[in-house]
Image (cartoon, rainbow, N blue to C red):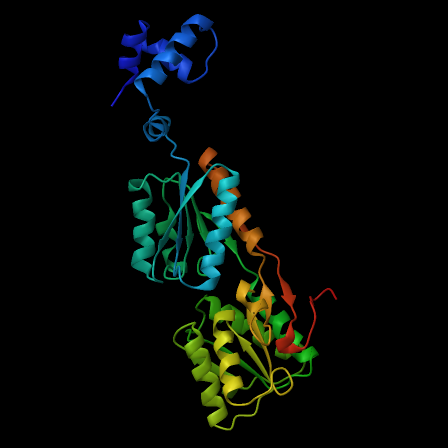
Length: 341
């Protein structure tokens, strides 16, 4: 490999002069600059950008650790982060943690080894009791619902408010017996399901509708298969309902399939709404109403916070909650709706 010293020797100048030319510094005579550049071309010298960045303490690479790359929401999030990173001349390396606390801790520990300038971590395994483990000496931004008031910057969704608005949307369309589908949570546990269930209950109470635990269905995975199975069980049991609030759009996809297989008309007999407003929601039949948590805002804010941390990591941590919109489509027979309308 050709080095700066090789260039200097061939051009008859000092290594410092070659460095000055490569970095476009002033005070190099034009004839000398041309001679150095000609020598660089002749010897086919290539700047080792990675080595130069390491000497400067920067790699212009950040990590994004997400639970599952193959889920539509996280794929959409990753694309938005990559796009936002590119605007700031940051490369993004995406890794999968598999919803595991251990893997999320490994992602934190390995960030230094992998020479990231910082890490955006979508945490679902780590919880509030783990917040002290986030006291690391490199830039980190947390996404998600599990860790509030931690030592690092945090970008979260308006899970309670967005879910309450989604259920209010169903109620405004005439639904009164509304099924909620989410996974199991314990007591005061903070999770996607606990927060969205809180929003579900808040909306029922606000509209004077009694909470009925028989209408709450727990599933063990956020997948279309589990959504279809859950709705099939309710129909087999003869459960009467006229609305369904799904913890995610991915689950709602299965609910729509299960209702269609049973000959239940959506939105005529049952209205369905999800959460996340992933891209496919516009194109299923019927198109799916959903809560849009402003993916672009979350990606932009997370990257902005991380970039600021990379420049200076000595300020107080901040928590930012994204705005949201309820998008009414064919599955609720509605239009774009928000609490302000």
